[in-house]
Length: 245
Image (spheres, helix red, strand yellow):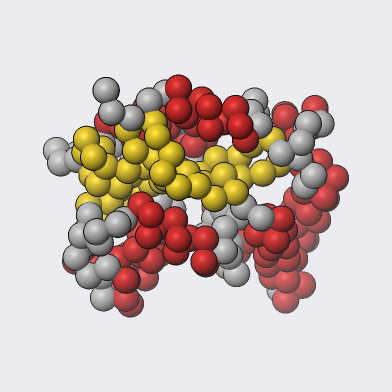
């Protein structure tokens, strides 16, 4: 079983692949899509969960998603068909960093996918290329809520604390118009859902040749969370406008 298949099982019970609950996702989309007829781009859309939620409640919205996973994009197409929004969704199978469009977008999304661009500020630079002058960006990024262990830094990279993260965004020419810091409940619910779903699959499929590997992965990831980063890692989602001038 490859990494993508394991991820699919892990997110079975938590389709938003970030520590956000349904109310938080809804509020973030409301702030990012104030008129409801925007053109939206998701850089690293995965299975299109953000786009599908936006399309399902905004009949005048049009969306495009970019991802390198053929399987995830196939799932997005199937889900769009079930929702009846497939005519308003365009999906691109390619590296998000290489995507180009002749038309700009009113909202550019990249939540939990900044690694694809090499970090927060490179992701914002990529988003700016696709944005209308009055458009918005919805971005999600990790930060250090407390001083991390060396093991946590090795796992997540050179993150900043929350205040410094926001300062970096502002210094880069962006104005935050909304933000959400994932709560302890959202963070814990996400981790329990991911590693619990993996463990449950392994227990329910004892004869599968991948069962032992999946169970070991669930155990290892749960232990890393509890012992390495649970008390230090946080997640912030920001809705940003380009600073005038």
